[in-house]
Length: 288
Image (cartoon, rainbow, N blue to C red):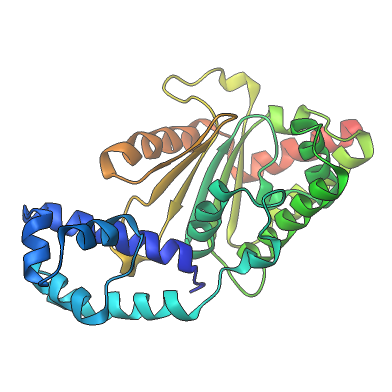
């Protein structure tokens, strides 16, 4: 499994808060258990500081999950010894701070599901298509900064879907993603051809929601569902939503569940993968 210190620290922090709340203990009681301060417990639970091994072991015993000690200690060790793959792109222009957590969760996910309404998902974009999308979305961005963002996207594609990794990737696309011509005809044709190649990958499933399906009640804009491996005991995972103002991470089961319901509905309403392939081919032939 690929590792991200950013995502691991976030997960450990969130789980420590969840386990304390499940036990019904206050931060003061948790602090007393480790003979520490309430402030330290707060730091642990927001990821500002990692607990020392003995503190972590004591907290997990206090929370009633001694069987998870070895797992948590191994994650703590991995978070300290590994490096996030995107560090070479780590500049404000190429990699905004809000995106780092997303990249961390994504590289660790063993299932990546997405609903896209207007553009082809970033994981499947060609270099030219990605450049056109970024140029249209941020026209004032300097060329060299846009090029760095494109390189980051290509690096993301390689890290998530290359290097021997085979997460389950299930994408549902609106037919509009196939119809909007971004970057000109040649770029559009190249992107549609690339989609046909991706759809044949054994770990990739692409479905198209045709215009004829109409508008789906309860389904708003684009979103992603990122699910951790089973050993993390985090069944629903994270729902990620991005807009022009902010990015949102939903991780509480009650908040993630509506996105799961929406995605399940989209899968039923969308064309089967084989029929989706046929539709992509038809649109490609129309533009070729």
